[in-house]
Length: 332
Image (tube, rainbow, N blue to C red; front, top):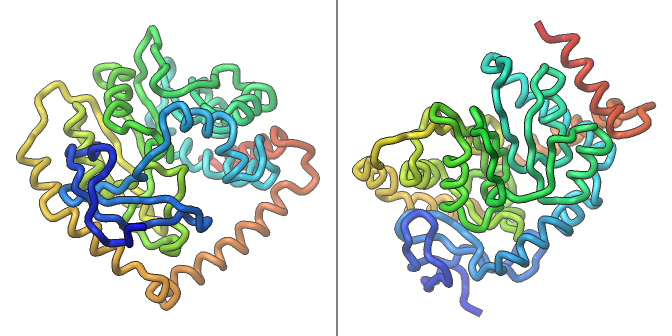
């Protein structure tokens, strides 16, 4: 087996720059199973290589993904509470933008908690979710008939969307360039995409808990912006989410040609930056820092809050309704 940090040739070209010259940065996933992850030596994009074929990936998300990462084909009570709170946070941030007639699509709608929170604000949105069990929960338990089973590439709406949200989904898609093109095709001329993805430079997780088959790609702010610019978007805003350093980016359609000078400037030295960040993030450095211990305390607080949040509630809908009722009572 080729050791880590050796140079190699990737089996597929880099989705950002087309390069195949890579550095091997990991040989196992976070469960200790064989999984080779590589870093492009030109732009710093990290991806799983070699990768399962598209049909195998589709089957994985349709049938196995939620079971593997959440332990069930439908959300457990604690996940209902946790994900509803996250959905409320996302919906609250969008509240100033909402207006009657706004067409919104949530890509990777999961069990529908974000769509439900948006519905409580008076806006019914469309959702697409590949996992059958979670989409069924959204439709049958939360009553969200506009959440459909399917994949981003299969969407061909008659009317374009004003806003597309894609929250911790883009990194799972097998062809980022095609996905960007599809997101752009779904938008109205003045439409926006709100995206959040993990950041390969983040140190939130221990280095041996980062890579797994579910995440086919890992971006940093520079190469994510470069890809968006290449695919006909302009970057409206970009920020790092506090605590996790996830990348939150807002994109709008751009009708002009890509600014190649800006793209070159973004990627200049970026591969070295990503490689250096990965090398610095060792187990020793991670556990000598304060972050993992703060995370343990936050998790303990989160679990206790979840236990209180689901107490006496009979099902996922009741949990979701109770959290949303409390949110809207407190809202100004």
